[in-house]
Every structure is written in C-alpha cells, then in structure tokens.
Picture 1: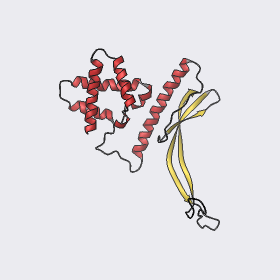
Picture 2: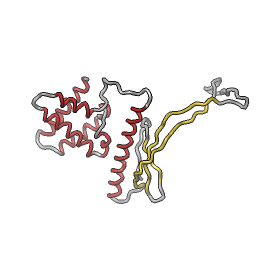
Picture 3: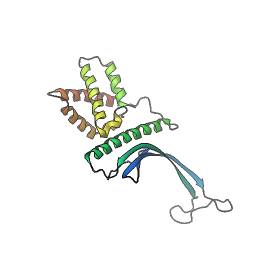
Picture 4: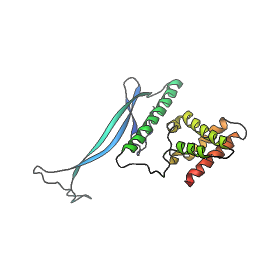
Length: 209
C-alpha cells in the first residue's frame, strides 16, 4: 500500500483520501493556529478545574484552525505493476515539492516572520553570488559544481523539491553521499573528485559566513 511520509513539524502536511476506484487523492492540510475561549456556566461565571494537575485553573475551550488544499494528484493505493509504482513515486515527489513551496510561502507570509538578512535563505542564490564574485582560474569548475548539484537535485525524486530553494541546514550527510555517487556515475577519472572539491569549497565559505 502506498504510504505518505510526514513529519510532525511540517506545515502543511501531505495527506491522502482513499477513493473507491483503488486510488488515493492527495491534499495538503494547513495548521493555522488555535483559539481559546473561556468556559462559563449558565450564569456566565468562569468554570475552574476541581481536581488533577489543573485544579484551580480556569477551563478553556480550544478550537484548532485547519485548512485543506486539494492537489488534484492521485496515487495507486496498492500498485500492481512497475508502471503504477513509478507513477506513484513521481506523483509523490511532485506533491512533496508543492508542499515544500507552500510551507516556505506560509513562513514568509506569517506575521512577524522575516528571514534575517545575515542568514543564507537559499543556498543556490548564495552559490551563484559566490560564482559571480569568484576571480580565480578554476571558476569554470566552480560553475560546473553548481550545475551538477542542481542536476542531481532535479533528477533525484527524493530531492526534487530542492532544485530551486534549499537552505544550508537541508544539506544533509545522506544527501551529500548521494551526490557523490551521482558525480561518480556522471563523470570519469578525476572529474567527479575535482567537482566535489569545488563544491566543498563553497560549503566551507558558507559555514564561514
């Protein structure tokens, strides 16, 4: 059965609704916060807890605000063929990419939330700025390192959502190991090692910043 992997801190979360034709419809569930309303008795007086850890404290009715967005994307609940499994994999990758973009927009639009200027909001932009100001003889190799990294992200379903925006903390050890294998498969001789050395050079500069 097709499973959707979600993390507790993700907002929105990717969810699925089972259909009668053997498929599941994908949608996003946004959590927009909660409201607390004091509980009162028939006379309008506040109600308090009379026992337990909350004894003596006023009762509140909590309402959670959630919103759904249908993606018009569908996956097979129990894929039977290789084609259906590939279709599921590609559809889920696209859905996760959309989810990530919505999450970034939600963060940027949230009242009081702004990325600090001194922080690197997008590693791709930082990489390009590094290239633009780089003057040493191996500049072409630096440019190739960025192109190969972007190609790796766009061609790897698990990382497709990062082909346009990726934060430094999202450059995980697992991603780097996969990137190394990608370079080996798309290069010869000392080429992959040279490309990765330039990539690490930019990483080191980002850490310094």
